[in-house]
Image (cartoon, rainbow, N blue to C red; front, side, top):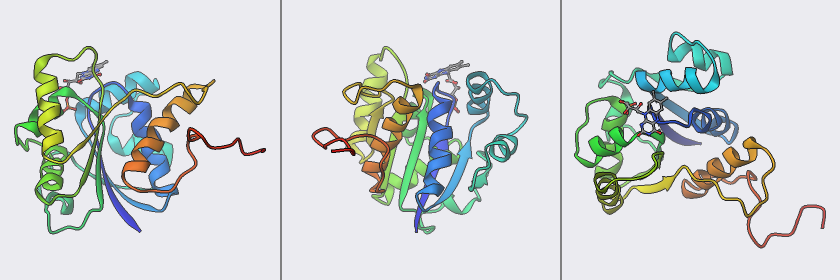
Amino acid sequence: MKRVFLGVTGASGAVYAKDLITRLPEHGCELHLCITSDALININLELQKNYQSAEDFLSDIGADATLHDYKNFAAPVSSGSFKVDSYIVAPASMGFVGRAAGGISSNLIERCADVAMKERRKLVILFREMPLNLIHLENLTLLTRAGAVILPAAPSFYHNPTKIDELISFVTGKIFDIIEIEHNLYKRWGEKPESV
Ligand SMILES: Cc1cc2nc3c(=O)[nH]c(=O)nc-3n(C[C@H](O)[C@H](O)[C@H](O)COP(=O)(O)O)c2cc1C
């Protein structure tokens, strides 16, 4: 069983977090989750809910995950000695990107990103911002140099999506490709349709 850490920050794109929270356990992963207070604001705005806490959100969607408080540096995931196969931050705010690039572990998600890079483990960062300034670009470059895999929250259209869900699952599928989870979340280019 793969152990995966997912950090959710206050960028737009709560739907990506919700999809990952649902699908990672469905795909056999032990999920460790952390949600910032600003992420909860966006979850409420974008999912049109009024959750009072991250716990409320998780129980409403029936999540099978261990939730860690984003201020709890004593959580097991805070240490490199706790074995985690892959770390994902999705969606990642540019504030997170800047702090992670600067080595500033001011909350548990930033600490986990720092741990992933120091332990040379897989770290996937799904950022969302538009347009990007030089500071964003330089921070993303620095994180790439330190071993992170950077994904823009930018689904493709070559698989002819007709629903928002297909755009979301394409992005989840790209993340699964990177952390090496088998899936059927999007149709790969060059593959024959299932009916053929
Ligand atoms: C409606 C809304 C949308 C936002 N969208 C983004 C975004 O797409 N990208 C981003 O970097 N910040 C965005 N922000 C700003 C972040 O929430 C803000 O920088 C916050 O401090 C991030 O905190 P965190 O990284 O600790 O979660 C948004 C804020 C709000 C209220």
